Figure 1: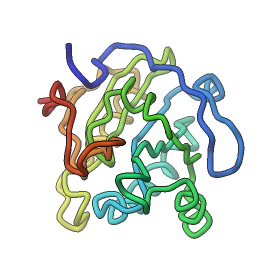
Figure 2: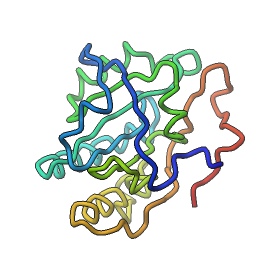
Figure 3: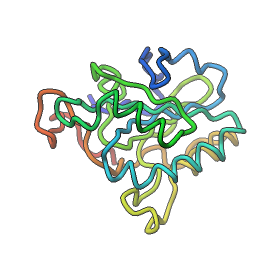
Figure 4: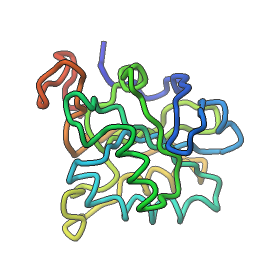
Length: 193
């Protein structure tokens, strides 16, 4: 069995605390025709350097009904910068156009099979997974990016077409699992393609 949620599977439910002080559940986004859930964090250079690319995508597709939900599952015990307090400060500084949720137990990251930060999951209106992987191919240095797989997937699903490349390898730092070395990955986790 693969570690990462397979294409076609339903979005696993969650109910997580956001940096806005509110609890957010999967069903709270049921009015959006497309939902992008992505695993991110406060410190990873792949995240920090590509956040503005992700912001532009969220702002471009928001008027078309696409909602973005960011989840930080990194253990603050493994990487203190990824604490909830750090999340609140980061959102206050950057005012990103998405909710930023804390997966302290890491149960949501396990349910989705998040491998890296950032790791994107795109769900259609029926909340079936239609794309998983990277946004761009060079998130550490977006000036070197040659493709935006996330936007291609969004264009296709919004047009009612099947996603032509439903899986790519996420590019970034590995998720920081509690009680594990900062570079540890679950043994059943491997590259998607």
